Image (cartoon, rainbow, N blue to C red; front, side):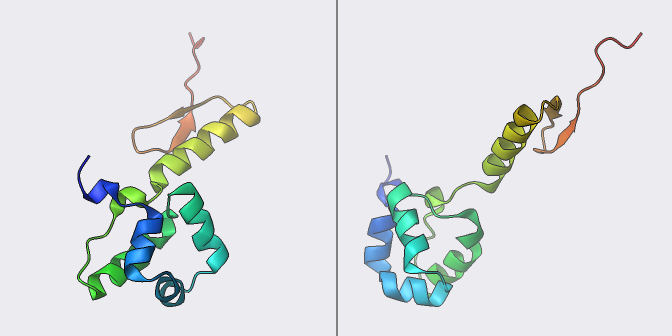
Length: 104
């Protein structure tokens, strides 16, 4: 494992200052605590964290972010399963109706 991927959310926050991070990003202690517990930052924080890191000449720990495409695909799959809708997930991650198999 490289040194970059050894960084956890908690170690990142200890290095940069958790209170400063919360204040600058405008996030609550509670949501930051959730990120620490899960060791994953929400995808929608990425651009703000990138600016935060850039201002401090730090590398963005990209491995700590939940990938939005994974979340959307997972939600689409769960939705299709829960409502009985049969769908195919295309390569772009979008949902499209399954072609009829018995069309003659």
